[in-house]
Image 1 (cartoon, rainbow, N blue to C red):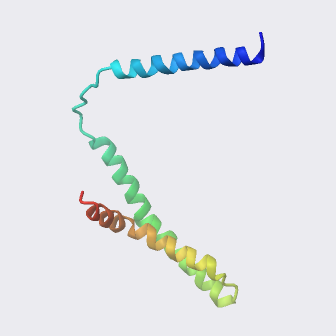
Image 2 (image 1 turned 180 degrees about the vertical axis):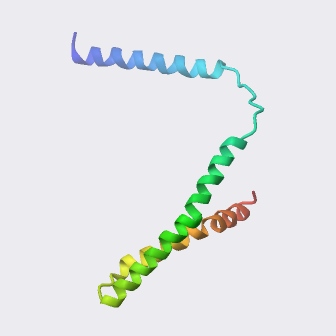
Image 3 (image 1 turned 90 degrees about the vertical axis):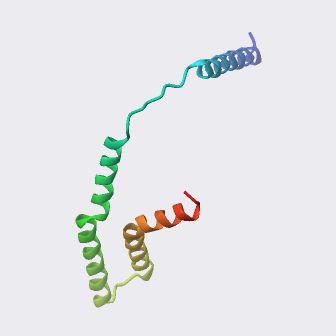
Length: 107
């Protein structure tokens, strides 16, 4: 057998499996899961609360104090300072940003 015939046979076999998989997926019925998403929503709300709550606020305060110390000692890297400030603004403004995008999309 030549390498090209082995490759051709492999391609045919892969195409057959792909076709059977697509047909099988098309024939599988869609089940209606009438279950609410409350457990998942609860976990996600908790996670957002952690990311935007007291822990994040404390870390942001520490970061700003660190920037103040760097500025005081003359070792301020402005690129890093601007990155930290923009990061804090995005973290605490994320909910408003998403709500604004959602309302502009008409959802």
